[in-house]
Length: 364
Image (cartoon, rainbow, N blue to C red; front, side, top):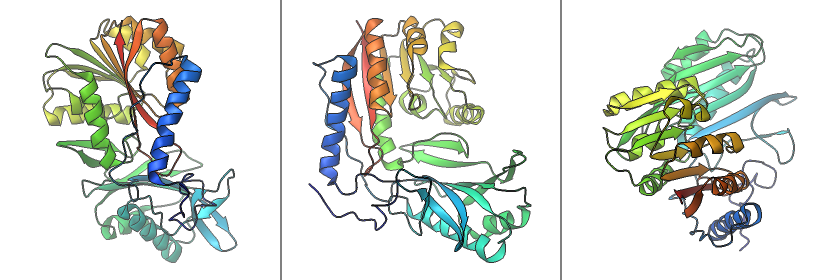
């Protein structure tokens, strides 16, 4: 199953780790890793792990990148960190990033090199929507610089660029040029996403992901839903009817604002969003019929698992990006009265070792 990597930097760059493995074998290994994690950490031997859902596209899928920069003897280089190092691999074109990401990166790097060599960029982040013409970028510099002129040129010359978020390192005072958000369309829903709000980076596969979450939720008309780590409302707003009672929780202020905007624009009539930890929801709501949990890589932990279990929800849909913390949390959920009903790995990050998994837990 060994293949020749399609990227000439694959052996040095830390962005992709599995390019030397055929895509079908990558999917098989991702399924096996989820199964092994559940068996070893959760002690669950009888759960059926469904085949890993392949991405509709396995190249040009990334709609967000973050490129650190460094000043070298050859000038400023931008790219990903090298494998097991903080050495920056200079990247002209990333084959797993979408075309608009590569185009924007080239335009920005060329502009600063030719016209503003005195402004030293420390990090460049680019978020370019796949199903909408808008994009936003974030720029961090080593020193406090006046970005007014280059920002004006970028907004005028880069097609679809909606805004620039500028953060000079010494001051930590954010400056925005243009709009602070972009839009992305997933299925029939359009989401506003601020530059600092989390959103899935594989838009084509996100439609499959939201469909899977919706299928597992199996929402009834009178249900109360808690959307934990809800971000801009991707899962709950994609799955629920417009009159569903939804309570979203997230620590990101920009994501909470985006979710409120998205719910209002879509016509939801009973949607609330809170800038709080998910485990704080139990003190506010007291009961929920369904829970959606999409935590970061560190997972939930005992405090949040126990708080989530207090809701007495008939089902929990847990979206995880880390099989080991998922397995740990599932073991704790089993101790509070929940059992696995369905486990589906879904490949959001082809050619990398990262694995997304969607699990449905049913109250016993």
